[in-house]
Length: 128
Image (cartoon, rainbow, N blue to C red):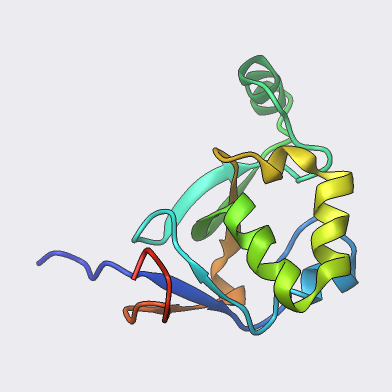
């Protein structure tokens, strides 16, 4: 049996991470389109302290600075744009402190307990 393909997640609690509490709490209540239709488990680093390059990733892996995260992947630039509509100061924090996540190929993983996945399309979304 093929697992269901989810289209979006609603953030239901502050996700784990290195951003300040108020920035992480700003995600609560947002519906975000998924970059991948299934929950994944992957090694991650922090948005501030994590590796930025492939050699940096391998060094972080070798020095055990990565941790396993199970969750849902979204395009970070799109997520920050959606955050801007309701919490502009939180979106600004991302743009100032972690600008690499504003790039088109950037991704966030929101930990599973922070998310409620949905099969329903997001109204007005090009992904729906």
